[in-house]
Amino acid sequence: MALLEIASAIAAQLASSFLLNFIFLVVYAMLVYVIRDQYEKYKMLEDGRFVKPVGTVRDLVKESVLFGAVAGFIASFFSVVGGITVDSRSYEYMVLILIILRLINIRYLCIAYAGGILALINTVLGFKSSDASSILALIAILHIVESAMIYASPGKYTIPVLIKHKSGIVGAFFTQRFWPVPVVLLTFLPGATGQSLLDIIAGGGWMPFKPEAAGAASSLGLGCIAAVLGYSDVCITKEPDKKSRETAGRLLIYSIILLIVAWASVYLHVFKIIGAVFAIAGHEGIIIYGKHREKNGRPLFETVRRGVKVFDIPVGSHAHRMGMKRGDVILSVNGKDVQTEEGIAGALMEFPTFIWVDAVDADGNKKYYEYRCFPNGADNLEIMTVPREERITYNIDYFEDMSVLKNMVQRFKGTGRPL
View 1 (spheres, rainbow, N blue to C red):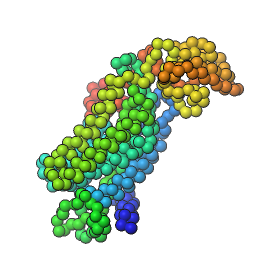
View 2 (spheres, helix red, strand yellow):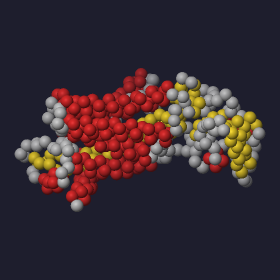
View 3 (tube, helix red, strand yellow):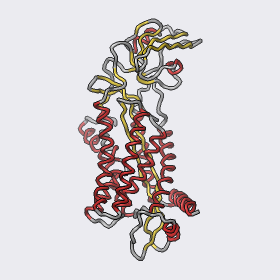
View 4 (tube, rainbow, N blue to C red):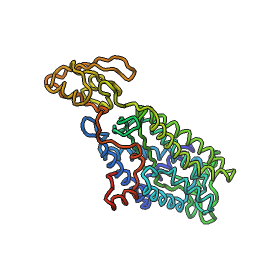
């Protein structure tokens, strides 16, 4: 019954915050606006020929808000039960740090960096705001939830792009996701509001992060903050779904370690510093490690000596109906050897109503596909391939270097870019 009471109180606080808390609404709306703006830039990467769009910006934002709300409720429950406490002043500092980090690079729009910096400042400089242990625990819980969301939807909303690699032009998949997360936490409020809830939690034997007293004029109640979680990845050496699951696993390990360190920091002050550094360095390490592996590994989609390498196959396309797979190498179409997309178009220029394709799969096994397209025929397979010739391509660093300040300076000089 106690757990149901806590869950009910959290739900009520979430509803109240969305309806009555002006400061929360402003911050939450600001986060949604930034996410929407980033998704608009994200969709500019779409090729637009045969690639099925990842969805409208509206759809992406709606899903981010929905999943962020669900994630927020789950994170709120464990945060309140655990006794994690963040006061309003600390939250204001965290928002300010987030804004500064957003100007430096969109990749830093994550509570791991803002919370880690705040925890480090609190511990090293001795600022009187929320306890670093609670901040670290909050970061850990939110990233446990994030790892679950990434694992549950692997490879979703990926955009196929062509990038420059040391082995030449290769195909890659770029993923970028953000979630605005409303989180209910214990916070210090004037008066006696919320003390009964504290009694329920303490009576259940929970609360490993027991709140420190904030003076006689205040007591514990519930408050709501708006946080943001972000995930971006470039897949060169693996399929997007496999890479997403690997990243989710690393993020889960990072979160569990951080949660253990946060708990240890309740008893030993030195772990507050260790935890604050690990919150930032560990999160950044996951990104750097993944990027290093993609840069130095063997690309999954690169040009071949004979035939045309299939890079992406939209659902519902002619190639999809034929049963073709990513990584297949098309050798001939309707009996004509092909080496380029133009060669495929030439073999289908008369809109044949029957198409047959000789190919080999990624393991070198021979494949034969056929497709009847009565009555109109088809003049293409509706696929994206890895080209031999130079086209619009990106460097892998392009997707990691999305700095507002840098772009403002470059645009002032006349050398800016859209993203």
